[in-house]
Amino acid sequence: MADVAQLAGVSSQTVSRVSNGFPGVTEETRQQVMAAMRELGYRPNSAARALKRGEFRTLGVITFSLSTHGNIRTLEAIATSAARHGYAVTLLPVAVPTQDEVNGAFSRLGELAVDAVIVIMEIHLLDAATVSLPPGVQVVVADSDAGDRYTVVDTDQAGGARDAVRHLLDLGHDTVWHLAGPEGSFAAQRRANAWRDALTGAGVTPPPLVRGDWSAESGYRAGLRLADHHDCTAVFAANDQMALGLLRALHERGRRVPDDVSVIGFDDLPESASFLPPLTTIHQDFAEVGRLCVESIITKIRQGGTAHGTTLVPTRLVRRASTGAPAGAREGG
Image (tube, rainbow, N blue to C red; front, side, top):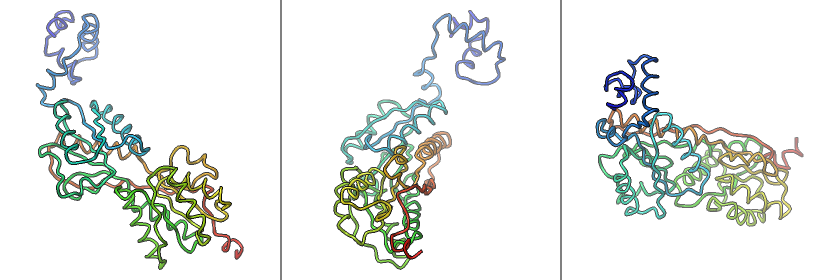
């Protein structure tokens, strides 16, 4: 820094201000300092800056799956938003979501020097009484029911599921079958509960729930079973991938979509508009979930707050060609 200051003809304090992006330096002086840095090959020492500031400008992210569309999109948004705020991201995937693995992940992130942690979860790990994240670590959780113990940012799972059911009932279907996600998933539970409540609230007895595992293959297997129920005229699939497999199964069994069976998904994958037929679905704003996770964690870092709450990101219905009125309603109309 002293060499840069001497070459630029300024004080070391001015070099520090330019290096850290602080105001109070004229543009002409800033350019002089930057030119001297380039000439000398000077780069700020991030470790020294971290010790001086008391922060590392790095966010840790713990996730239990990199295979789902939602997690990847949320992670992408976290990295992009963090970069805008001048933070780097250290990713730590956890293969087996257990208490020991979570504790080990936090220990490793501590060794890697992060300022706070964002946890992307699809399972009920935080709901377990035996599970607690280390004290003194600022944490924001995405996609889980963490109660009032942690700050949570999530899609409005229940609101989206209700909109899906209401859309199909409003088209004239007597009931709506549900192809649910795996039992361990918080999102799947929220969507299934909202499906059941929406039907019950409309005075309709819910049909038996059919379970999948988020994959198109599980949707296909479930679709083969649902195709045998000729009273099944509408299906709400808990994600678009299972809806894709469902569409294939119905086609193979000669059940036309939407003439015989209406299908609606959840996610609004980029490919959903190219399904055959194009899929009606519930749009989730993964980018907004990721952005709000970063905004929340940076606020915690700067203010040191201990208050917790849940922020729900709204969903919206995207109507395409896979849903329509049931045959009886069309004939009656």
